Length: 437
Ligand code: SAH
Ligand code: SF4
Ligand code: F3S
Image 1 (spheres, rainbow, N blue to C red):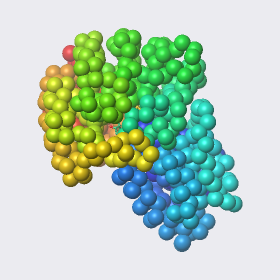
Image 2: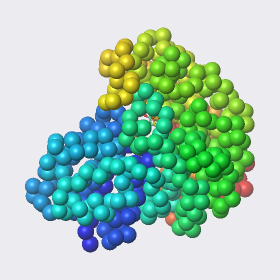
Image 3: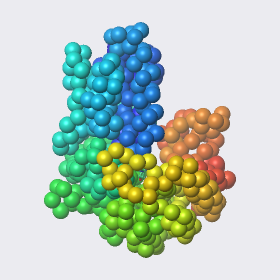
Image 4: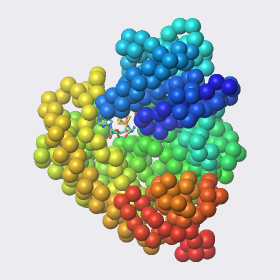
C-alpha cells in the first residue's frame, strides 16, 4: 500500500483539514506513515497567521524536497493557509514541488494527487462548504466538527479572512447527522470548530443561531460538547443560557480579547470595548460560576505604547483568565495593520511579551490552586510521556490533568481529585463517582 505523511501547522481547523485529507486517502487505500522518509506522498499543511510558522514550513519544505533527489517517484504538496496565500508562487520558488492545495479544496485531495502525477497542480479555489468527509483521527474518542468555514470580520492584523474566504455555515441537519455518526463511532468529546462559532447560521438565513445548534446537539447521546472560537462581539445572552443549561456543553469558553486597551481594539477593528468585554465576562461568570475562561492576546500592535501596554497588563490583572495564548504582533502581507503607523520594534515586542507571560503564568497558577477542592471529570487521552504509570487527560474545563492509572482507561471518562496545582493544570488521583463530593 502507498504511504502518506502529513505534518500540520496552525489551528484546529487545519488539524481537521489534515484529518479529512488523511481520512479520504485512507478510504482509498493509502496507509498513514509516521515518518516522511517512508512515505510516497508528503503534505505540509501550513499556517499563515504569523511569520514564524510560515518560515518553519518553508524551511521544512526545502528539506523535504531534497528527498526527491534520492526518490524521484514521491509526491510532495503544500496545503493550508500558506498554500492559499502564495498559490503558484510556491511552485516558482520550489520547482520540484508537485502540488499546491488551498483551504477550500481538501475534499478534492484525491483528484489533485492523481493530476499531480502528470503535471504541476495549483488548486486554490474557495467555493461553498466542505461537506461530511471521512476523517482519520489519532485519538478515535475525540473529534472536531467544523460548523462554519471562513471569517467576515477582517480584524486589521489577521490573514484568516484572506486565506479562508467568507463565512459559510454548514446546514444544521448535516452537522447533526455527522455528530450522530461520530457518537456511533464511539466519540466521547466533540469540539465544534469555526473562526467565529457565534456567527453560525447568519449566512443561511434560516433563523438558526449557534445556541439553537447547541440545543439540537444536546438532544443526542454525546458525552461532551466543546467549541472554539467565540468572538466577544457576537456572544449573546441566549448563548450563555445555552451553555449553562445544556448538560453536555462543557464550561470552557475561549474568548480572545487581543488587547486590554480601547484605542488598540479600535485599530484592530474588533468591535468591542474593554468595558463591554468585562461586562460580558461578568455575565458569563454570574450564570456559569465554574467556567474556565481562556483568551488570545497580542502585544506590540502598531500604535501600542507604554500606556496601551500597561492597560493590557491591568486588564489581565482584573479579569484573571484561566489561561492565555500570548503572541507578539506579526505584520501579515495585505492586511490593513501592516500599513499602520507606529510599528513597534521586535525587541520591544518581546520584552512586553515576556512581562505579560510572567503575569499570566502567576494568575494561571493561582487560579488552579484555588480549585483544589473540586473533583474533575477527565477524558483520559494518553499515557503521560513523562511519568511511567501515569495517564494524562483533559477536564471539562479543558485543563490538563495527570494521575496514576492503567492504560486501559484511555478513551474513558474518570473522576479525578486534584492534589497539586500547576500553571498548566493538575496532578491528582482517580476517585469513584460517589467520592466526587
Ligand atoms: N478566529 C480566532 C483565531 C484566529 S488566529 C479568533 O478570532 O480569535 C489565533 C490567534 O492568533 C488570534 O486570536 C490572535 O491572537 C493571533 N493572531 C492573529 N493574527 C496575528 C498576527 N498578525 N500577529 C500575531 N498574532 C496574531
Ligand atoms: Fe482573524 Fe478576527 Fe476572523 Fe478571528 S475573527 S479569524 S482574529 S479576522
Ligand atoms: Fe493558521 Fe490558517 Fe488556522 S492561518 S491559525 S491555520 S486558519
